[in-house]
Image 1 (cartoon, rainbow, N blue to C red):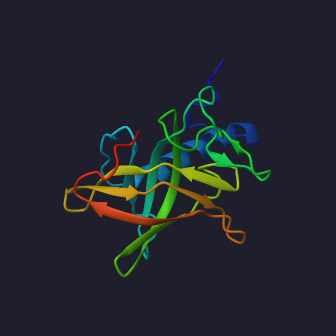
Image 2 (image 1 turned 60 degrees about the vertical axis):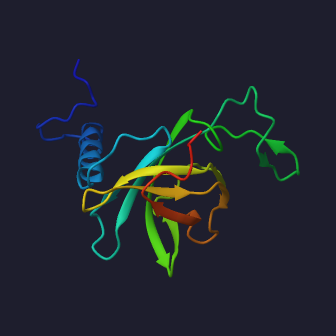
Length: 176
């Protein structure tokens, strides 16, 4: 029996055969146009992609989350009680992925997601403080520093916006 997840040169005859080919194309184009990647510092990394000629689009990989067994709760629920949410907050149990556009206003940086549900399907995301490895176009190693923050989806665009970002030559956070 053939593996349905292997790309084939055969012409597809039905939708079942077309799905693996579409998946391969998405992976090839989605990850094939990005600059060099660094090894992450246990917190994640950032890489620039050339998908949009007017604005740089970045892929962000961030390690987040901790065990719910020893968690006293880190997100205040609608009822006012603190609860644990998997793959959010401090720790390194999960790897979250998103594409972002970094905006600069004066000396201040922010980042807005361009994909809707990659980080989470929740209406909020508890971002731990992270310093993400990044190699710029001149081969300089930099860090995108994101302070801890609880962000909410924009009700119109459904995107998240992270604020207070900075670029430095050394990490501002220890990524635990």
